[in-house]
Image 1 (tube, rainbow, N blue to C red):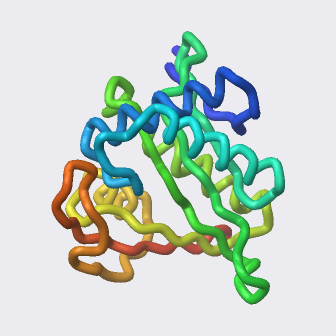
Image 2: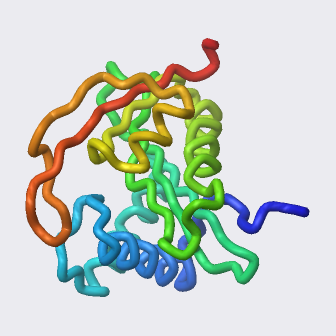
Image 3: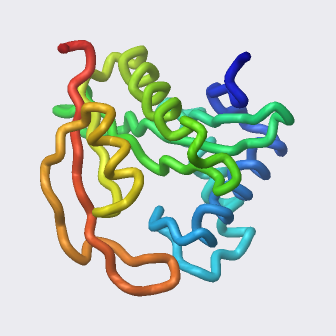
Length: 176
């Protein structure tokens, strides 16, 4: 039996824009701290998806999407490549999102592994990310071998308000 989802590079088309916007709306409405506050207007979610895909077209980032058996986007992760000249050996992992209906099925791990592979393919061997302290994502990164750097209290806000701490991680790729 195959996986219930496929991970691929996002295309810039209407279906992808709509799917990425719906995914962002779902995760923010579900309480994820991914840079947006409630209420999140659909137009803002679409604009964010459009900006991310334009950035990918310019080679500044890689946008990966996970699609289910109906080709609906149920997850996404970005590998940010646009960094200063003295940091072109690394990339930032950003906006890792899994739709609430697709959680607890291994999709988060699959997205992280796909982001790592995409970074290596792009010539990057050091990845950095941050996530909400105490979250399922924090436990996932630790389980997958990411190295915890430390925590900054009150770093960001929950979408409904209130502060949350952030934990920073890194991972060296292709070096054991």
